[in-house]
Amino acid sequence: MGLRNIFRKGIQKVGDIVFPTQYANWLYMPRTKFNYEKEVNGWQSAIIMACVGWVQRTYPEAPLYLRQRMTDGSWEDSHEHELLALLDTPNPYYDGVLLQQATVADYNIEGNAYWIKLRSTGGRVCQLWWMPSSLMEPKWGRSGTSFIDYYEYTVSGKPQRVAVEDVVHFRNGINPDNMRKGRSPLQSLFREAFTDDEAANMTAALLKNTGVPGLMVSPKDKDAIVSPDDAKKTKELIQKLTDSDNRGEPLVMMGPSEIQQFGFSPEQMNLKDLRRIPEERISAVLGVPAIVAGLGAGLDRSTFANMAEARELAYENNIIPTQKAFGSVVRRQLLTDFMDDTKGWQVAHDLREVRVLQEDENQKATRIGQMVQYGFITVADAQQATGMPVDESQHVYLRPLNNVEIPAQP
Figure 1 (cartoon, rainbow, N blue to C red):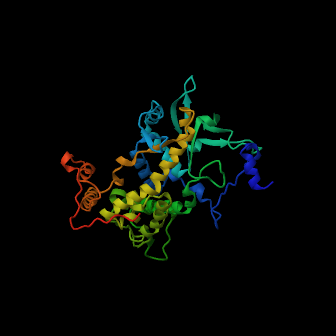
Figure 2: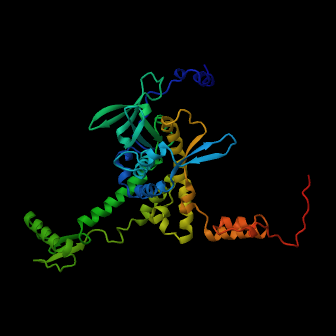
Figure 3: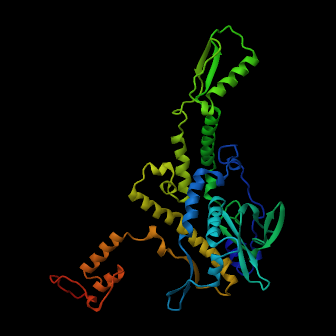
């Protein structure tokens, strides 16, 4: 049976489609035998959290609302609904802003984010709880005839079964290695994140282990023999006199000695250029320009003008696509608990109050003034668009007398 016929028949009977039951679990990135994924924790990476932190702070700016398509094709907005009240106060312990912040962080770093629904005795959803993706896992049967049978939530090492209808699962795309889950774009950048972590560790270790640039102390007489005890005491004395608050204190040796610098100077420890590449690539895959996240790779070229453009680009590359994806998931997996038919409904984010997406007031006034000047809109329309009072005398067009009206050809 051809693939086309399988899917055509699968519309009538899903069991005819067999889903993979085992997936690849790649340990290594291409052309290396080192497991970078195991060594990287996205939640502890300064670059990743600079980008994700901006997303967390910015995402809740646009409030949620519902839209319903009317029979004439227009949309009717609703800002009052049981679902919206639940999303505003998902449970007694934290509000909707914290719920959104935790969800978008997990979504970007891990590629999956989960909410668990708690129901009343009557079966109504009354609470929502974010669950770390590290504790949740979709499960399915060995036959492969079902996509997801249930979710497994592991707490204190004990797995608990959660029904599919009691989970809201946000996927960042579809993971080709396990298409029941999403995949974070950061999985292509484990080496870059590891590079930045190692650079930070190296700098910290050098500063921790050398109060001043490293010293090598040796007897001036090359034939002299130094006992292990004398070497140990000399080392402890030098460390005591040059470490921490004693940096810069004079050092007096008890015998003829030769002291050589044996380490890195501050200039040699400068890894600025090395750390630029991870900053640029990580910010690129997350869709948050480095300048917006406050990373050095972007700040070097930042100006007041391009900062506003970069923030708008970050909205278009990350925030708005994520909002659309989340709205679709909430409509399909949560709104259905509040209404039987969700066709024609949307869960959307109101972007009208997001300052960075609003037109500059000077540019707006200039554009409206030109439209009045050329007779496209009335003076009253211009007054209303700029928030100024309107009276009856302003319902007029201003058109030049030197223009001649020529009827359009039929």
